[in-house]
Length: 88
Image (tube, rainbow, N blue to C red; front, side, top):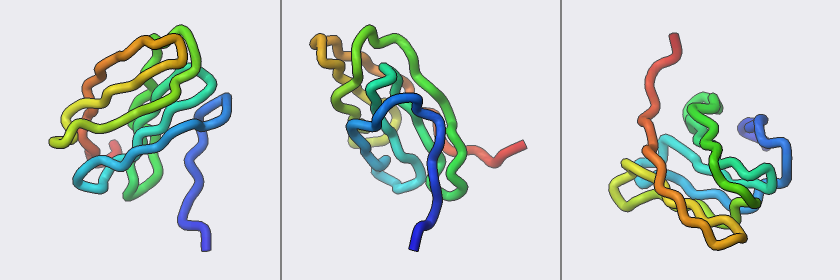
């Protein structure tokens, strides 16, 4: 059974990675963004923009405090990975 649907990317999703504590999911896409999602409720926490080409890989740091992404043009970016906070 489907547990939820994460909507936000405008291109195909290429890669996914769960945070070490399991509360967040990072996704990378053909739309040149990395998105961070709250697993408990499916909210998009942040859309990270800056890559000039599709984002091939995304990985959390072992402590979950940041993400590293790689685009097909070879650019590597490091991003802060905000924690899940209660919605307003």
